[in-house]
Length: 169
Image (tube, rainbow, N blue to C red; front, side):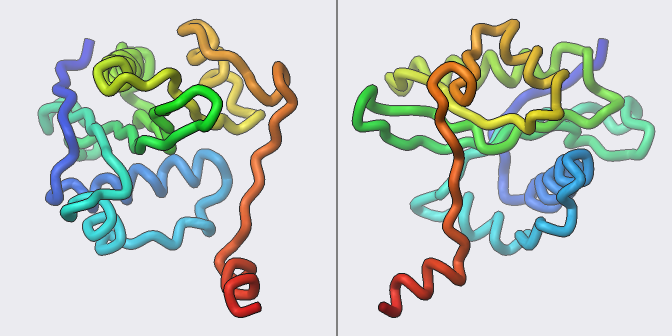
């Protein structure tokens, strides 16, 4: 079992968070879509009004084959649903491959659940790639419901160029 600590991310962690974001994007075969910088992460997550919160899992250096000590992260924020109220939205959640199956992901999800309960959230929402069957099963074992199959919701995005067009009109 890996010895690890789970803690709130600090400004010094932004390079590791970005590294893990890129690893996750590579796993999802979407690496070229990561345009975020360390400065973005620093400005957006650690100012007076952060846009996101983040947990990191850290191990002693000797436990990691590549020398990284920050080996997992969970990025989340709070949002509001007009039907059910406050939600914790889990934006990204990643554990380095060599540390999977050791209880780190479960501990992160437990910590996020505690945060959601203590902040009176009615639910935690997140998306999972359809081909990521291991993660889907991980969440289902913990009581998650697949809203896309249960309720028929679809996820949409309006990209910045289209936002600019709408704004200009």
